[in-house]
Amino acid sequence: MTAIPPQPTDYSGQYALSGPAKVRDARVTPIRGDLADIALAGKLFAPHYVVPMERAVAVPFAPLRKIPHDDAEQTSELLSGERFMVLDIAGAWAWGYCQHDCYNGYLALDALGEPQGKAPVARPGDPVEAALARLGMPYVWGARGGAGIDCSGLVQTSFAHAGQLLPRDSDQQEACGEAVDAARRGDLVFFPGHVAIATGPDEIVHASQDAGAVVMEPLAALIARKGAPTHLRRLA
Image (cartoon, rainbow, N blue to C red):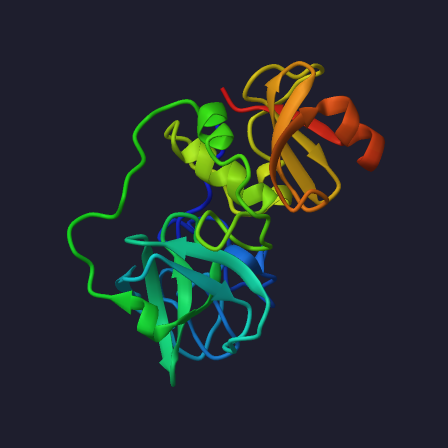
């Protein structure tokens, strides 16, 4: 079974105000020191709770930033039409989370518009073919196919084509599916801080920081650079 990232409206049983609360994963928990999503009321303490405003990305792609500054680290990326749930607006920036994976961050306000129709839904397909279609796309940290793509962004967007919703980062993805001893087509191959998709037992496709692009290469070549995989995971 594929693990689906927790939705912001489903925190039941995860948190309780029985003492100091520790956020399990700040990347996907919509809370700051001054406010939190209304869904966390009664689970995590915040001075204010806010009902999120749904907005849609109105540009081809928009970087999600760790802090509200154009030069700040890009942690993810939203593509045209994807939804951003706004919890706060300050100057030229909106703070909130990506609807599809709950990833928190700051998005430029001028990249957002009113939602028109439903959010984009990928048609079922082959995640390996979806990844191979991006061969040669530049490697860009935090990107998901707009300015470029990173290793976990390639995995997340490729598996969305098979109707499988995965978390954003490779360490989160490593908890999905079931462990296997040998790779077959479509399995995920994990290394420290990196993830690749097996196209067969001995070959992988991945967004390679070393190559600066999405490439297909022998699994043995990647092992020679990074060492033995930490995990092999099968999603279906």
